[in-house]
Length: 235
Length: 234
Image 1: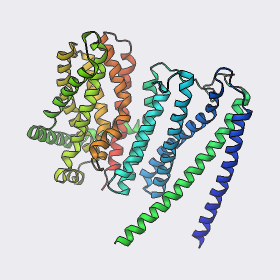
Image 2: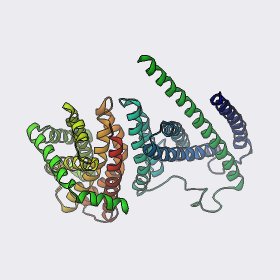
Image 3: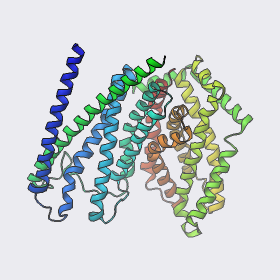
Image 4: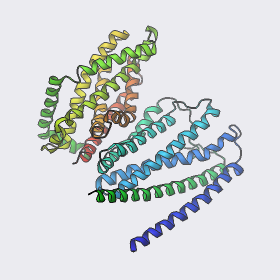
C-alpha cells in the first residue's frame, strides 16, 4: 500500500507540473507576441529567437544528462539509471529536432537560405544524427540489457565528441548570430526587456523539459513492467 | 594522467605477447581468405571511378576535388574493413572464444585496432597509387602518408568499438555506418583539410590540423578500451 501512496504523490506532482507549465507557457507566448518590442532590423521573424534559444539550451542539457546517467549506469548497472538516460535522450532528440526546424524557418528570410554549413548548425545536425543512433541502437540490439549497454557507450562517446565536432567545424567562417546572453555576450547586444522575456521563456521551456522527462520516465517504467510480466507469463 | 599510466603499464606487460598472437591470427585468416585485401581495394577503386563520372573531373578541378574523393573512398572502404573485423569472429563462435580466453579485454581491443589499421593502411596505399595515376597528383608526400596513418589509427579505434557493437545488432551492415560516421566527422574534416593543403603545396593549416588528429587519436585510445571492456560482458 505504501508503494501506491508514493505513486499517488508522483501523479499529483506531475499534474501540478503540467498545470504550472501550461500557465507559464501561455504567459510566455503573450510576452513574446504582445509585450516584446519588434526588432528594428529583423522584424517579426526575430520572435522565433525566444523559442529557438531555450529549446536549444534544453537539448544540450538533455544530452549532458544522457552522458551523466550513462556513466552512472555503466558503473552501477541498475535499470533505473538506464531509464533516466533513455528518457533524457528521447526528449533531447525531440528538442534538437525543434531547434533545427525553428532555425531553418528563421534562416530563410534572414540569411536567404534554408540551410548553410555554419559551425553551430553543422554541430547541431551532427548532434541530432548521433542521438538518433543512440535511440536506434536500443531497438536493434538483441535484448534489452545489451541495448542499454551499447546505448550507454554511444551516449558517452557522443557527448565527448560534441566539442570536438564544434572545434573542427569552427575553423570555417561563422555567420551564426553571436552569443547575446551568457559569459561571452557583448554588453548591450540585447535590450533589457528582451533579455527578461528570454529568461521567462527559458524557465517555461525548462519546466516543459522536466515535465516531458518525468512523463517519459514513468511511461518507460510501465513499459519495462509490462515486458517483464509478459516474459514471466510466457515461461 | 593516471589513466594513461595504467594503460601503458598494461601494454608493457605480457599483454604485448597476446596482442601479437591475435594480430598474427588476423593476418593468417586474411591471407587464407583474402576477403579484405582483394575486395576492398577494388571497391575503393570503383568509388574513384564513380566519382570521376559524378563530378566530371577535368584536370583543372582535380586538385580541388581530389581530397574529398580520397577521404570518401577511404571512409567507405574503412566501413567495409571494420564490418569484417568482427563478422569474421562471429562466424563459428569465435568472439565467445576470444572473450572466454584469459586475455584482457584491452588486449583484444588493441589487437583488433592494430590489425584493422594495418589492413586499412594497405588498402589506402593502393588507393593513393590509383589516385596518383587517375588524377595526375603525386600523393606520396611524407606529410600526407603520416596523416593517412594517424587518421586511420583514430578511425579504426572508434570503428573497432562500434563494429563490436554493431555486429551484435540486427541489420548490422546498416547500423555500423549510422553509429560510426557522425562520430568520425571531425577527424575526416581534419584529414581532408591537411590533404588539400598538401596538394595545394601550402603548409599553413597543418600546424593546427595535425595536432588535432593526434589529440583525437589519443583521447579515443584512452576511452574506447574501457567502453569496449564494459560493453563486451556476457
